[in-house]
Image (tube, rainbow, N blue to C red; front, side, top):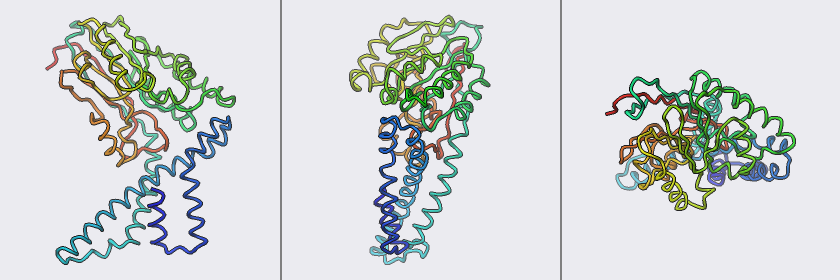
Length: 372
């Protein structure tokens, strides 16, 4: 993407040698920024890592939007050239290289600013599940799902408080976290107080029916032991290929992410073995980070809650995500009659930006009754 941007910018603005050297230097630094962040973090230089992370990750989002917009215009220009050759038409004047590059820059700057704003606008997604597995006349059970907060360098107390306000306002009976609660090192000396403060903030949110969490892939990247310690301190019971029967009648199962189980095949086998042990009759809630439903699992749960995909986080990356994870964000019925809700995610990974994929806190009401 950086090479593509360099090629188009240099051609559009006819840069001389000094300006070209400056542009190359900036693009190289920004290309290496994510690596420099991790190297600084691993060396315990957390302030340096944060100093690099803010411009570096915002640039990552900007260059993706810029390159995507350029690619769209260049595809249109290529189609027009082909039409010129085949039917002797003429290319519209506004589709020149310089105009399209300038417009792509304007789009990228505007969209990036909007995406930074949008990442902080938490929305509440409402889901109602009617189930005959709850006793008639029993009260509804409200479950609030958070997913993919990626608590770390760029997701701090201010953003966490915004999320927790939405969670509190929902008055949950049960709170669940479907992975990637943390991201990055949490045991550096100048991070410990902030880590403990955010764990206490999470623990302070009331949930009479309990709080349950599963691991995601970033728990592995951040360091499993410290990630589990943080999640436990935040008040969650971490379900690692385990099930628990709640007094409300709901059965909750949770499975580890495949990064901790040695790959997708081993993860599917572990999930299959766990689901086969769950007694029939109770409403069965499955917590799983990745939005995948193997054929061996389908029909062995009533509702699966997942995250991981962020709905692409920055448009049009969602189009690429769908190639790997075709189950869309939102609530979908599976082939065997189960349901899965895929969260857009509550935080951000990498760029602190969201474009046409607003962050989500999901409020799920399990209501007694006869479902269609």
